[in-house]
Image (cartoon, rainbow, N blue to C red; front, side, top):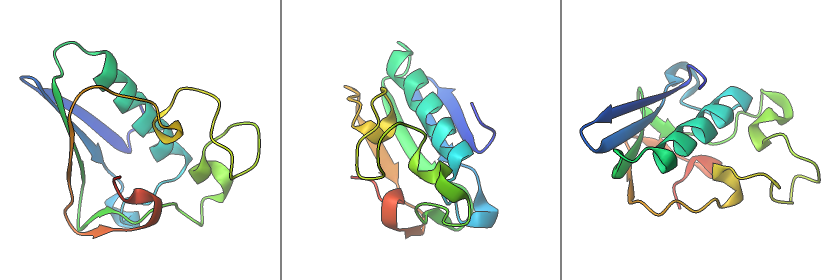
Length: 114
């Protein structure tokens, strides 16, 4: 998992934290991969019953990092408007556990929980 996303399990609560505060937690390729890895772990870890997603610093997430090239949109065949063909967080991968967004500041664009 990328260092830009933290995963911590406390009892049965998994906390997934965007950890790129100097860029207001903007999503670049490394953050996207870290989120995919964290949500994969959360989905598969039997001891994780509930997830909390939050951001470090003064923002939850300001969306895609427009300075980071195409990596913020993920790496997959097809155009920007097509969903990835692999199981991942951004492709609508279903996780049948409750996930809470602890929004702590700015929450914009693709960083908005939905």
